[in-house]
Image (tube, rainbow, N blue to C red; front, side, top):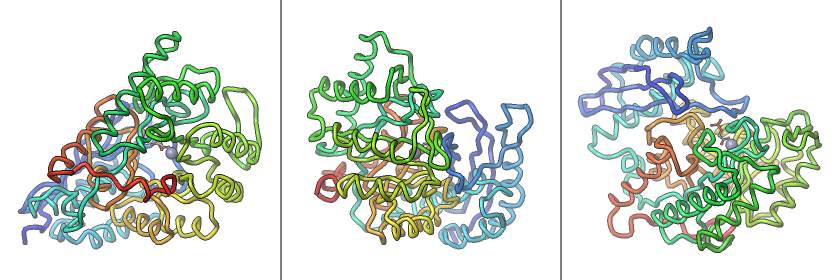
Length: 427
Ligand code: PGA
Ligand code: ZN
């Protein structure tokens, strides 16, 4: 059997924040799969957790323990199994770990192994992972959601909002969406420089948000879209990740920039005002993960044209999506494989989102590497949107560039995006 797993090996490598992380290599007679685990900084409490060594070395972020699980228990568990049977592999990993949050073997060890197994199965068929997942289905490229300013936990809380992003809603294809975004990113940098505000970049490559208020960032973003020669809203829209779990708890939200604390409804009111004043088509984690009732009120008020995206609130969990759909708390799922734990659970979350009639967005983490697996997942599963941070730094660009390669491999018209009318904001 070409897909029989012959070996599983872990390797300690480094991520975009200069922290240790795990690369897992899975070998079969038919080929090799290799994946590096990413790492979040603004995490939800229900996500799978990375196993880190603690102590003083590398700020406690070392991964020797998780590596030992890969080379020991996980290698023993998977050797001899069929890499093509992803569900069985993932079920075995989950059972062997035995904890609800993967803390024993390590979420980092498990997610990298799970995805490396998928790559190995694809390699044995001599196809790329996206093709292996798509099978005979016609593949589309995902519409990019790209950060221009990075704030929140990714920029020392310089502004409260974590991601000020753009979505090229009017782009004709994937390559054009990148072209337009590149112009907006450049224009935003130029506007920052002209105003004496250019201070480098934040964690995911977006410009450092040296602004007096959150609204000033929105205003500069609008000007950058116009300076790039694009029509705001019609050609280039705005999306935000508020990441409110990072600054809110028990219905109280601390706006660091303004030095005041507000309640759930006040925060919702502030954000609904932005939805009216700016061409915002998606808003992620507008409220904290423990504020479900306020979420439901916000989502109802935002209306059906806005994607209200659950990240920390949903943690890529099929069960949480089903629950949120029943109570109307959001309408779009952010999918991060390392929140779910394995590839099978990530796919289950996507299926739950589809069953609920939601949109979904495949997403990277703030701690990333050259690994491009998530691009293959988006294309292979037919997910219409992709979020990987900004338009700078190679851990981000590697992913945007992989999309260009896949578009080329698809041949004539290969960069095709889902139709505008298929999105809530395009209806
Ligand atoms: P992360 O968050 O820092 O946990 O990766 C990114 C996000 O909130 O989307
Ligand atoms: Zn988020």
